[in-house]
Image (tube, rainbow, N blue to C red; front, side):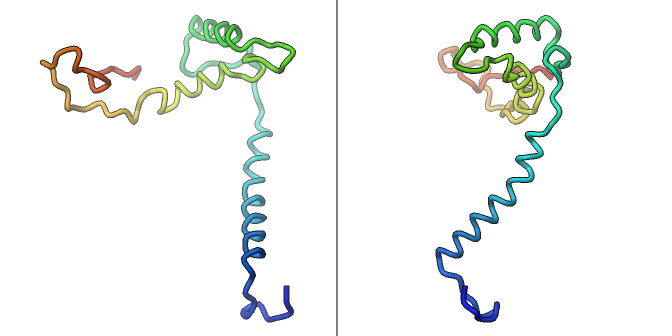
Length: 124
């Protein structure tokens, strides 16, 4: 940087990009470190928000079968995949809050014509 007063200093393109890169990294770090420090409940003590007891047992078994713990790395159980699925389905995404559920439904349309625009009920 030159010894010019701050009002007269005009950064080069390289200095500007370096400063904005550093500012972006510094602004993201606090939220990232906070997210990694969250207390996690052991999977055995986790209370599902969306599934009942039998569904929860199935989700744990199914994810453990699909993503097993092997020598290559952790499986679904260790990485809390069942918790992710439960929280996603309990959120507005899983409850289909933003799905377009109003017309233009055509009640007399042939079945080959009907696609995703038929009236579907959500779990609400």
